[in-house]
Length: 170
Image (tube, rainbow, N blue to C red; front, side, top):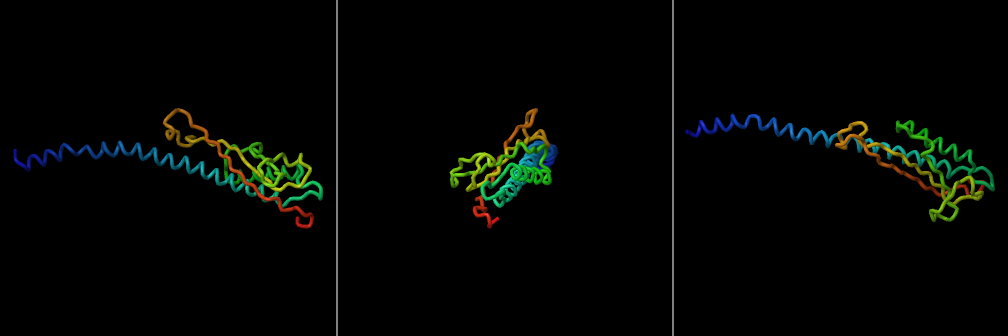
């Protein structure tokens, strides 16, 4: 067989190989893109919730009810509502006010805090935190390669020093 006939037959035999390789790689590329979309959505929610906790903590760090009580239940509820509204504006789905926790630290930043309304004292720090479940694979289900999406817990938290130690500073 001549060399020209061999090369022509080899090219004819290799015509479908590129289509098969593309089909195999397309599936992998779609999974990668879907994963980027799903994890990007989770990062979006985490960033929005971090901003929301920062807004709530900033509000509480400058709030003052009287000279004896720093934060009462109305201020705490206002901060929780502020966090909820910020999350709603960022379009975080199914976010509830019950997902928000407000803690006052009365012992100079040791992390051992209590509910702000039961302390009766002026706190050293205020902490606003969120616990939110996001479903990875909810938008694009084949990211998980199983039938159901899996849950990831987002727990952003912001702690700020309470700035209203003196009544005239608030």
